[in-house]
Length: 273
Image 1: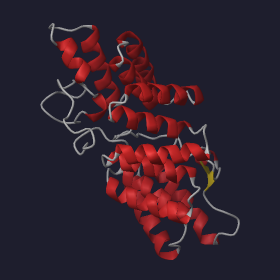
Image 2 (image 1 turned 180 degrees about the vertical axis):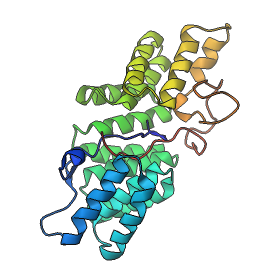
Image 3 (image 1 turned 90 degrees about the vertical axis):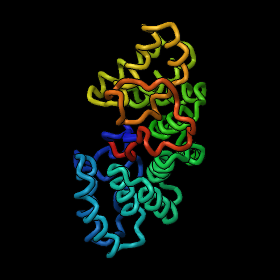
């Protein structure tokens, strides 16, 4: 889940584990690139994909000193920073990647997610729309924009976006989780629980999914009469990871400022199944 830390991992490294070179349509290297670039790029990408972003950072920083004008180096460094929860640095690196390659679909989506991780959901929506203008079938962009809409409380748009994402790729747990949250807010808690259970089957250890299930359960089976109303105000996407309540247990109300999620659930950058 995006450890809005939403990522254990997401959907960009399409072929890396099997020896390929593509990152959501963006090649890791091009034929005219220096020969010393490909190996370290692949090494750093594999480290990020295997959950070792801290080990990837020094490799990428060394590459930047040698090849400062390569968009893919900045893109991967942004992914690594995002997975380390250093989202301001992720924003900076993805922005640099886009300056060097404005048509990079992968960097555009990751830049939007990094903006959302710093609380700028409206800006994230703008960037994900740009990504969808490049490729209307980019599942990660649809999932990301749905998360941003949900973080702003735009539940109908969030539902529509996540339903589109699931049509494109039905194995993304984040899409099912956010769709479930949106459905619950729109008054369909039974359907919401169905989506949360699908998400849990896809990613059993994700705390964001567990929190969403706990919240939907409180709507379906309220202990007290007033819990139904309180449950309707809660946004699990912005709930703090740590606090007085145990992991997965909802707090009674939404944080007052939906654009400030400094203590909220963060997504990691898009990295790949």
